[in-house]
Image (cartoon, rainbow, N blue to C red; front, side, top):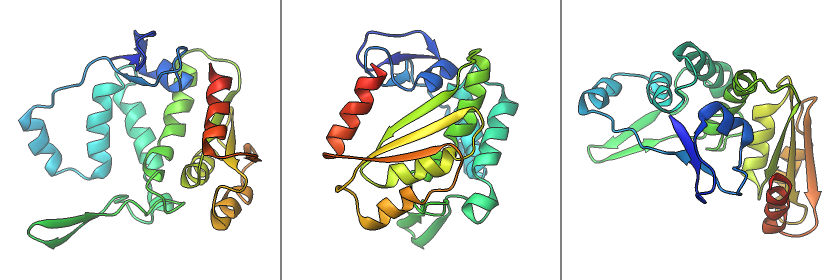
Length: 209
């Protein structure tokens, strides 16, 4: 599976390279060049799977330069009981025959963004190895609140990486600010900036491009 920029100026990139780069050289986001059509039989099989098994089944369709064992180990490490409180990170509860609730707040920061940001570091570490990168990876994040804490928690103490989170100093709630500035980890750097979220985001994009 190859990936291309949403701005059309960059394409033909394998998933590991796209994960490592984060943003395409033309400033766009990486998306698959093709969307995999999932056969009905596979959907029926996934009904019987747990969350982690479904994640592996879907990810291996798009991360074709990762072997299944790498994906399985990444998913198992990300969605473990230690981080999500049980072996089922996203439980579904039935209210009635027409209403179900999917709970996405069981992660370490109680934000739905934990679902992605607990997995990304494991894929990132493998992406660095696959692409032959020897330099330290620095993750730059702009946040208006929840993303910052979830990203800091996900990447804390991940070898070979540092993460810098830019947030509007007066543009987040006090609890969000405290969550970020008290984050544990030897590679985490939350930084408050003057201005709003757009200022923080534009600054990060300017660094990338």
